[in-house]
Length: 115
Image (cartoon, rainbow, N blue to C red; front, side, top):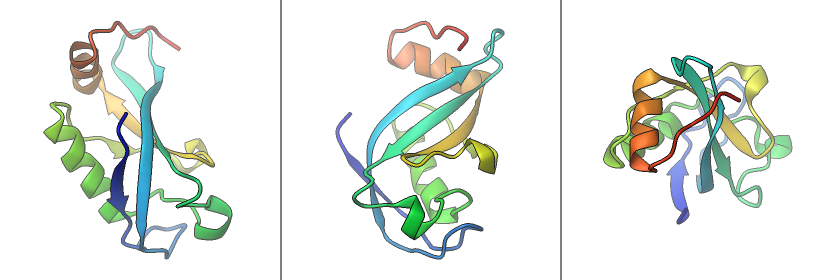
């Protein structure tokens, strides 16, 4: 994946940091057996964003807005943040539903297996 930049507004529950964050990868982290829901992991450059210093991106409004605009531009659909406990040290965890999973499979010509 070519790197993209998303910005944070600093209005999340776990961070007051507003800055640019380089996104280095996006992967499906989980898909249910029936493909009704899953997890999208959006990996960020830890040199740009250190969760121990900057906090979790989770719940930041601008990051989610820019991510969803990017996903829609790529032919996918909007996502929502997953729960706080699913956030990683180098990725943001997001919930996806059946429509997103089907679009992902079509876009990347792949069949996602339950994980």
